[in-house]
Length: 399
Image (tube, rainbow, N blue to C red; front, side):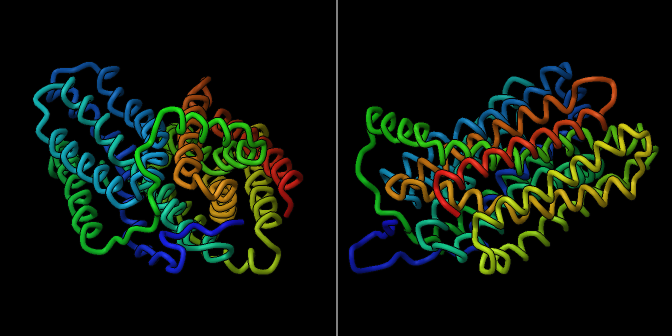
């Protein structure tokens, strides 16, 4: 596999991992942080709830589709300038949302915020792959994956506290501040890790994406990676209804249980490098997802048997997220390595698949009168699909 380097005789300097993690976290934190404040904002702006819910759905769509543009642009112009543009958009849109005079302005600001926020998701992965390979790349991807999943899990708790104490507009002021901090740090500390291939063209963009979509290995890893990771968004969306309405848990405890799931992902991230070093990326990928799938079927079994309770469900979901923490960095590392000449495009298309699958799983988890049954079914099916995709990718590409 060819190496990616900005010059024939000089390896690119690695970007600070903590900075890439901060930028990734900022983009995903904004996804669900506004959810607890929707009723307050609707009353303040005199808008209906369906209109206000567009601030969430359009953010997810913007996060998905924006990644398709950032990857190719960064392959053409370099990672750093394209990322800076995204951070500027994210910061300014946060300020616009904080001072939005009406619902339409807020919806528009949220869409722009998403288009800026998704830059970090794509380019963080691309910059890691530019400067690392093998187990080191997997270890670095693990932290970015944790940030991508931690944001949506942590966001409703923080959003609820801010809305209750400082008002809903304070949420966007915080997000704008995070964007400004990321922008300043990136300006001073972020090196260029990609070469940049000149002005992009639609024809070249089409060729890049056609090449990736024509690769069974990339498609299997992208679909499998989405099913193995962002299927969790379905459970996060259903969690308040499961805990509060079905299990009679106090509202303030829901954030605690979701936080425990983040610990599962963090543990998986910490184990990833050691496991990959011992058994290889392919075996780690399949084994980790198998653990998640088994946990999902255990959750589904509890629901079907009518024995659902907080302890067993949280325990099984921690196993599920432990598998996510190990599988996701391995999947994305292999996916963006399929074609080293278009790492940015591969990262963008992979991210699009993840967010798209996350949105689908979130929608499916809301179907029917039983949120626990719907969420457990979504996780179980996603686990099976991911396992089949990973086996297909390994059969074609080797362990």
